[in-house]
View 1: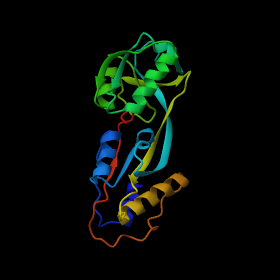
View 2: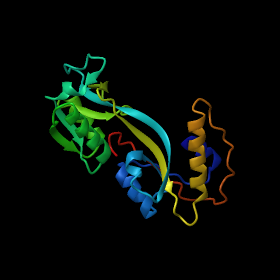
View 3: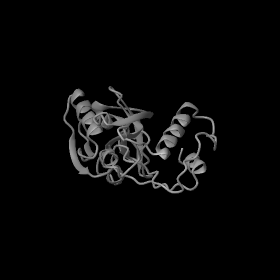
View 4: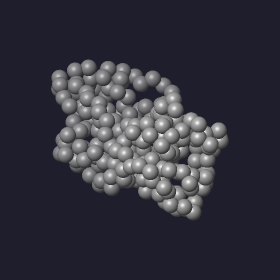
Length: 219
């Protein structure tokens, strides 16, 4: 989507950064950002925002490569009862955090939380050293020392979506076009986006600032 947008608007400045979903949504409401890719479960709490779903993915367990469960094809929540959990701080990822706690309790135990960290990269680094296990979205990319296994009983999911301010008096042309490109990519996932599409914005510079959330258990 970003490549297609740059082709259609070669003179419009674009900046991509990373943050938690909560931080990205705060930036949208302040007017510091134009669009954001965030966890939709968090965005639903912000009525001034519009959103389009992009992808729904399961939560998986991240394990040290030499862990006793690493050879299993899938892992049940009850099998994690005695494991030390490494988790992202709740203020950074409230929805996934609460999903994990609830799933553990449904399986008959309260998780042993060994560490809380600010982002998923730190979490996976600790998991890779054998410091515990973690529950993360499937799209999370780890280290060679970390393996990921599906979770069952229950199977939980989380959704990513594109979000923008719908209450602005004048929506920037770049935002409208970027949203249209993302919708096109969703509806035609196997076809390359056309470099044509919506007419280019008249401005020669601007702030088309999609800020992409790579928290991936970082809401």
